[in-house]
Image (cartoon, each protein chain N blue to C red):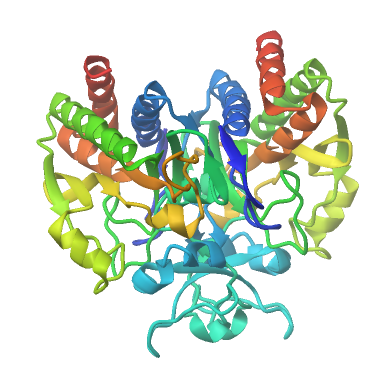
Length: 284
Length: 284
């Protein structure tokens, strides 16, 4: 339909998915969101920017400062600012009060902030996530990408049952797609590197990744009551104990990474879409 | 399901849509995207950040500097930066090479950048948009919101036929919903305020808004060949004339604004969703 007459996008520029890639991403996301709904989840829609003070609650700037991107208005006091070589210098910026998230599940904890859960909850959400990296690779390592998450909040048992159920589902779906997924314990430094939480993580992994080749395309994560405490999400009152902070866990799908692996496997997004529909029918 | 025990979200914080609002927004978006597909459009997926140099092509920083938000990494040379009162000072930031868009259709022009169109094209896309404002109002004036657009590229006649067809569709859908939409010529300063384009816009409106009360919830926009020229999108070769730059137009739906108007009309998102489904069945 179109004929390229030059380079379509500059190297490293945020990617625009073409129609076939878009159909495939939407189909994959519908599969994962469908699993969530079948398990009783409802969906919420988070924004792709938060108050810096909200992301700060999750130690985002303490543990991942190098990955962080923050959003600032332009300083217009000295007249209209124009970028130089596609860049605004810090002196052209005003203070940044908004932060771009690097994971989708933050929206779930902020949605339930300062609430008391009447029962175990399951919620799903998709968000744009952002990571400032040294280099980018199409579909595999992007400055901006989409993450679908399924988040459990409530008792510790509930959070673990959800991870076990979705671990099985991801394993079956990966097998139906012939992806050869490997489940690997991971040591992402979500919690501070040298604190007691990090020690605990080495003894008892809190994150497992599903890897296709060398690329993690999904993960299951146990947070204990870290997010519950930071957002003051309380469990329903227990007659035997005062209300404590909710436990949480999440199941994450890096949608562009799934896309990248499937397009590489099938040679194009159209054939990959047919494979996804076939696998979804076999692993309902 | 939950009991609030305190303020759920701080005033002015980017909004998280609850499950009922999410279902309504997805249903509205499916209606508008369905109209686009029925008219022959395919969908593309743009990122919520672009290179500043890409947004600069559209005079975004020249015409809307006060609305602009740009994204910067943290300056870590002096040790880990921590925000003060939820703010990073400019001196804590590195240069900003990424810009947050204030309209969705930019993705369409960048997708077709440096291409030659083989025929008239119709494409649809939804994106997160961002506007730095003095104040925010829930669902009506947000720092971050979702915009569905339907973009025509090709001959001038094509761009005008698309606007005429969707003007009729929006009018019928608004009537089926009992929204009392008014179609008003608008003078958004998309093009430079004092240039010949602005004069032309006053003589021959290039933007019409559909207003519910005092809120513009949709618009139809004629760009002539502004974006075609800026992105070097060429029309197929005309035997009688050399290939010129493509004309473009777009139809925009501010999804949270539609949500706000419908929730106010029906009292809650659940009843609004029933009304949308009913109206969509009557205006297919």
